Image (cartoon, rainbow, N blue to C red; front, side):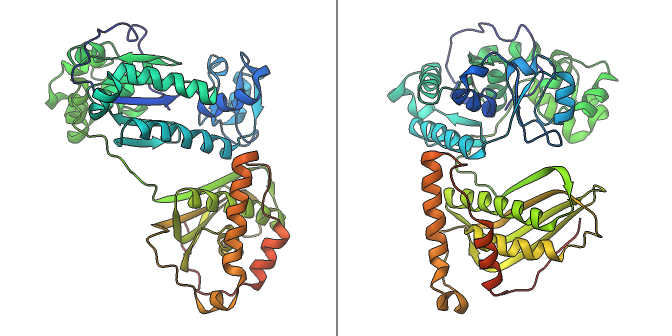
Length: 425
């Protein structure tokens, strides 16, 4: 999702020459919030914020809420101070994932050169699709129409000669727009922007540049590299100078895979009941396992993250004997890791579960351990969870979930195959 500064005059007609503009950046508009409005149309036009509760953070906000200053990653408490009339909706990650996967499949039908950046944005290189599907702007326009028709949500598309400029173009096309930046207009487009629009320019870098009188991309482009390096460092100075002149040689790289898959939650109030914490660990293990299965991967390592009421964060991790994508097995390990963590008697504020050290499931030898071979329920557990996946796909992520009592029974019955290897951070 795009959060960079924009210039009011940047979204205008920069020309229609699409020569050399083969890169598209597709960015869903207020994605989580837009998905919620599809099933709650009565909330359209109202400020809506997606987040867990007052102790959590904003995951998405409609443009009506953004008008009050609400932004993603802001604390929910701060958001409600800015916009007390906002409607707060708890997230449904299963819904967002389903829509995201469908949109990404649409992109894959256009070209194999799709680089997925996050759940709601991706780059495409469409140079090989032009003869079949038309110009880049025609491709972008048809894609936007299809996303709206099939899912009721909107996306913005930037078209340019490279990834950096395409992403900036989609930012200035929001919401629900398409912006072409011809290769010949790239420098002029960039010069209209504030320096904070450049990748790598955060608050600290922006302040450092301001001390040298640099507040716009035009000023940065006109500054010699040596001066920029003196202001922000050797590597950053040269990099920002290249960006200011529209130079970005990075290709669109398809098939980038996640290195780990996790989920975490901050409780609305600190919990002293470890049984209640374990119930949430089971829910998180179920979410992680479902994502592992959707992506066709298994986790060699299970880790748990715990934050106590004094904001101290502990992590525990264990490499399992047989990589898994089964929630009940992930829960068993996670529960043991949680029990091994020294909480010093303090209440728990946050808990998270993560599958790490991933491997493709079809390429991994699924050789069961002796205990698993003697226990016919092992494969049956995965079959049950695959069935749950199908139910959730049809009726929604909240339609059915693993029972805590059953999972704990599996936990008691399952042998411990390896001692925990843990670290504290």
